[in-house]
Amino acid sequence: MKAQTWHGGAHFTLDDIPDPKPSPDYVVVAIDTTGICGTDVHVTQGLFPKDPPQILGHESSGIIVEVGDGVSKDRIGQRVCVNHPASCYECWYCRNWSLCRCENQPMISNGYFAQYAAVASRSAVEIPETLDLETAALTEPAACCLSGVEMLDIPYRATGLVIGAGIMGLFTAVFLKSHGVETLVVSEPVKIRREMAKQFGADILHDPNDVPLSEVVADVTDNGRGFSVTAEAVGKPELVAACVNSTKPRGQTLMIGVSPEGSPLPVDLYDMHYREIKLIGAFRQGDVTHRVPRELAKLNLENVISGCYPLADLPEAITASAKGLGIKFAIKPNR
Ligand SMILES: [Zn+2]
Ligand SMILES: [Zn+2]
Image 1 (cartoon, rainbow, N blue to C red):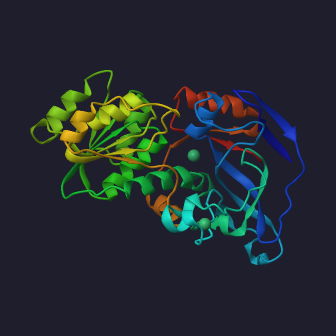
Image 2: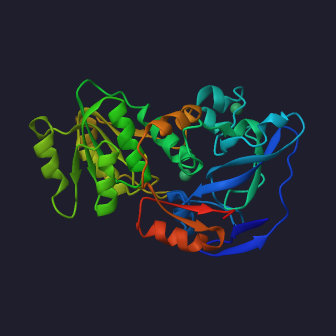
Image 3: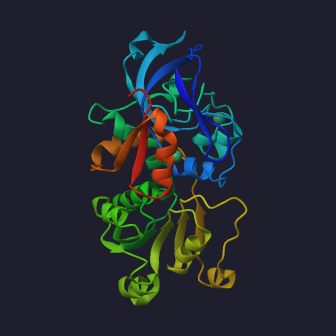
């Protein structure tokens, strides 16, 4: 099969490698769609730690084409999302942290920027009939946002702010609304993303190049004292700080974006202490993945995938993602 191997920096090679074979309790999935994640972009920019060489790609969907011993042949032909973290439910991480942090997670044969992958049968989750495979590839980013939003305690008549309307900001917005945020502001400088936020439930759109955020806080929130909940979905420490500074006393700030490793938080800790702000990190899918395909089937996700590229054009797709030229780009390895 064909696969894109990452060699560090922005260097990839399109290679012929052996087709994966299913071990016992594994299935082989023909990959339909693999989303380009912000993390993939950060990896190629040296902003997220990973060791080359390896095949990247973790937001995927496809069709089961082969099953190993111990898996029912009925699974062949099933439409699945394959980013599901399988969990043992027994290790310290499963019991004390979250299911997606399981230390006994089964290995996958390779990342999903490839035509096929062998994954544990329990990691390949059947999707509802009403969900198309392309959209199902959004399960992982949506799960990360739903897991984060469910860590918040959202009060009655809450106001909310999301900074960043990439795919993570958009899913954070839609789940904040479905979890009770009454008035939601989404702040994003890129027009196409900002306008997409309407489709995801934003009540007020903010262009930071046009009006300072402090004016929005003054206009929208009660006495200008800040939002009940704020979420940073970009991965820039100064924007996490902007969220903290826009949060009302005893409010909460959610960190959805991945800030570079080693970055300090540029906020006045006295102010954070005095105003009793709660800062919550949110990384990965928590325990919610199995619910997400059904949630996705309920949303209007038209035009969220801005472009699909063949496997050979992965570097171009990563460049397009890095430039913020759309909402979400994806690879179709078998096209
Ligand atoms: Zn991802
Ligand atoms: Zn475990």
